[in-house]
Length: 223
Image (cartoon, rainbow, N blue to C red):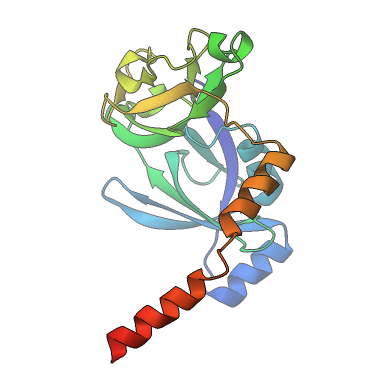
């Protein structure tokens, strides 16, 4: 699996004002913790981080390289991203320190590949029931995504389950193997507009004396 690098630098100041100052300078506040080590506060180049995330490289092993070269590299995975509620830009990053000889659990995206037979030949609709998969692996074996070939799916046929996915070597699924990943369903039938209007009119129609009977019954019940 590919290992990606991020340039980081140490930061001493904490708090909201310090974080805002970093963002104005094109940096994102971050912290690396875990593996029984003291937490380290960092700043990450915002552009480099954005490029990394745009290439779906946020689910595998990362190597953090310090800009000044004064500190040793850190092997991490991204544990959490905090985003701006409107712009959706990354406001902060949590990195989890890992050891290359100890397995970790992570969630990776599922990407469907191919055009199902039930869609191409029978006009069905491909439905992706599961978009992420929880896996366990050594950090260097963590995949950036799990690709699932759906070309054999037939209309109204059985779905693909997690247990049927061929995972990369050294990767184990944690999610229940019976969970469906994708299926081809029949298309939703839409009534012609004239039929829908006619049915709506008929459903809304009420006999002229129905209200009178109802009123009489209510009066009797109250009496």
